Length: 176
Image (cartoon, rainbow, N blue to C red; front, side, top):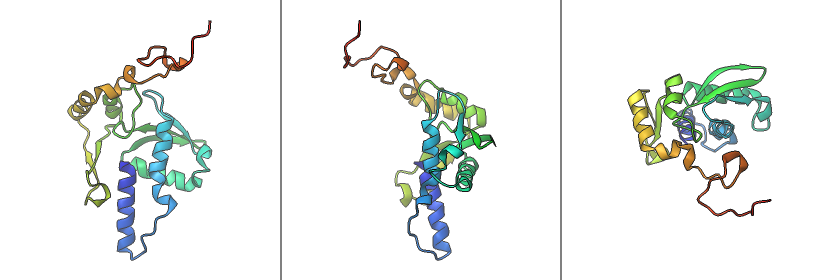
């Protein structure tokens, strides 16, 4: 959400200054859409190998590269390079984090800032605020949201990949 808000607020301000119409375009949401695609591929506390050629249905490769560069420049992600159309991407834990991953470690790895969104969203003068990296700040974030980061609190819905314990009754009887 923060990436969408920041990108669109700056894009619309630029269009207003140049006297262009403010009609919305599909490409106005590309950085946020890319971020969601990357976050969906996250596994634990590891980099995401994002295939640019695998996302060519989303946008042309030059737009994908520009979107990744914008996300990197604004510290939503850290790019460790692109080889053979595969980008190695680390996601800022203020944007997305998988259960069981420690956001403090991920934030320290790339000195990610903590990103917050204004209560009034796009109506705010500055819809997104970047708080510079500091270990104490990320400790406060972790302590305040520990139940979110603790993988044991996520529902497994009896998925074999996620274990067998659940507070919910089994919907499918055990096979013997």
